[in-house]
Structures are given as C-alpha cells and as structure tokens.
Image (cartoon, rainbow, N blue to C red):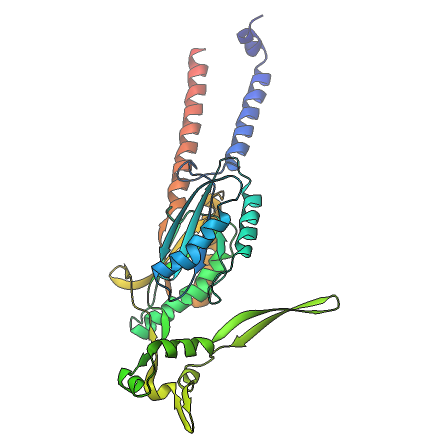
Length: 353
C-alpha cells in the first residue's frame, strides 16, 4: 500500500498532521529572533574610557596603550583596534566565534582593574556592542527655545533624563548624543595680571584641579564591616571657583576672580543636528550584540511614551529612524506570502488530485 493510498483513505489523519505542522511553524515563528541583517560580526566588547579635557595624544599614551597591553592576554582574543579622540578612548576587542562572552567580559574587567590610570580618569566601561555599527533607533529632541540657554537645557535633559532611562533597558548597550550645547564653566585668565604676579597658566590649572577633587581614599575596616572612603573637595557652585586663593605672599592674597573671569558657558561645538530646519539633540541608540532588535525597539518605544507623558509639551521627542519598523514589515510580508502560498497549494491539490 502506497503512501498516497494511505493518505486518501485517512483524510482526518492527514489534516491533523497538516495542522500540527502549521502549529509548530507558528510557534517557532513567534520565537524567532529577527534582525535587519544576519549577525556576521565577531563577538565584540568595547572598552570605553572618558578623560575630559585630554588631547588625542594624551588619550593614546595614558589610556589606550595601557588598556591594550592589559587585555591583550585575554583568552580567545582575535583582534584589537582602538580609537583615541579628544576626551575619549575606545578599545574594540574582537573574539573567536565560540568565545563565551559572559566569562570573557568578566576576565576583561579583571584585567582592567589591575592597571593604573590617571586619578581624574573615569572608570573604564565595558560595552557589548561595536560603535562602528549603525544604531537601531535615532531620536530627535527639540524645544521651542532655540537660544544658547535653551539648547544647553535641551542637551542636559537628553543626557541626564532620557539617556539614563534608555540605557537601563534590557538589550540597550549605549546611547550616543549629538547636537545641542553642553554646559561648561570657563575660566578666562587675564594674562597681563598673571604676568605681574609671575605666575603661569599651568600653575592656575593645577591649583584649580587640586581644589576640585573626588577620588578614592581606600577602605576602612571596623571588625566585619568595611567602609569605602572617598576624598571629596569639589566646587558646588560657580561662585566658589572665583573665591579660590591662587597666590599668597606675606599679607597679599590673590583670588582667582582677581585675575580671571569665571563664567557659565558651553563647550565648543563639534556638530549641529537639525530636524525640519530646527536645531535638535540626536540620541542614537545601540543594542547589545545578541539582543533581538524588535524586542529592544518595543521596550524603547514603551519608555519613550512614558518620557513624553512626563515632559509634557515642553519638549518634542521624535523617532527619526527605527530599524525595527523595516524588520516588522518584512516579517509581515513573509507571513502573508506563506499563508497565500499555502492556500494556493491546498487549492491546487484539491482541484487536480
């Protein structure tokens, strides 16, 4: 007895088998991880270190090279590349395909804890993404106030309110900001007055740094209790900077405000972002390497709805680009094509067999 004869004599069994295959297919489709392109990149980690105010040459010598030497012995490491730019070092680590990334990231952190970096360097961050890849979502933040003060507030809101909330989401690796104005306290020194006191600009800079510190002072052990100790001596208001004593001889005391002007300003602009001809702050959102693009984008959009509700009409938050939209549309077309193809196949079998 042939398979065809058996199928004709047992139509209920054939229908049950067909529906079972369809059911398993639908369940598998719902659990399928989807991305815009297949994951063809090596497992990567990015070690990012910020050193505010340092030149690219200093970044390379003081941060990038020590990090490269420290992590160069990590097991499974295939390639190291780095980018040293003003105020920031990115060391990209590429590993073998079968490298266990969870264990590898812990090993990288252990190696980083062994190196000694300058005291005012921020702790290196380990990011599970490649900064050269495209973000999955680009956002634009705008407000009606386009003055310098308004753009500074816009950038501050994006960095301290939106960015921090988005980076806490599952699957989000990093959020990069662009555009707007970054607040900066500037000390403009009068070189003529400085020369009269026989002082140099470097001495003034060192004096300001010495009076504005926040560094670890070790640990204090009391029985079974261990306390972390920090040395805190930071400026809390712009007026305190001007009251800093920079020169003292006999009865003569010179304050910073006597030889310089301290003003609340903003950093030099390196980029300008515009949306519909209006200035804006861009937020580029990157996902972790193994995260599902559609799921991450869904979490982001849910968080954006909450942010819009809290900010009200003061700020306008626009989704400029969403990679998940293209993916969802493509998946929808595949589903439609599959259903139509299945129905046509059943129709042909019904009519001609």
